[in-house]
Image (tube, rainbow, N blue to C red):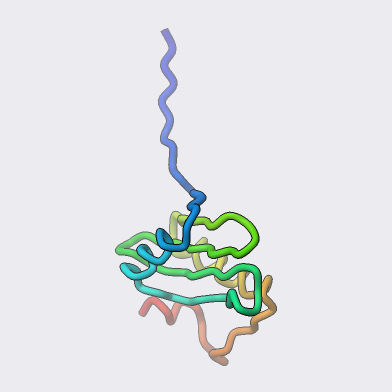
Length: 102
């Protein structure tokens, strides 16, 4: 017999209410908030809990999501990508995202 063993990691999970996202947000170290639900249909909150990196995605028009990043490098790239999507330039002139973790 052949047995296949694999590891399944959740990368993203949909949640149906903002209260679940708020509960995580309250326990997390907030790194950056991008967007504003008063101006945009969605908002991303990038945060860290222990050694885990998350993006909490709030939306008025689509599903709400919790996205997990496996490492700091991918997390920082996601922040840069989301800022580009929202048309936000780095407000901290001369700063590096690495400074956020020192």
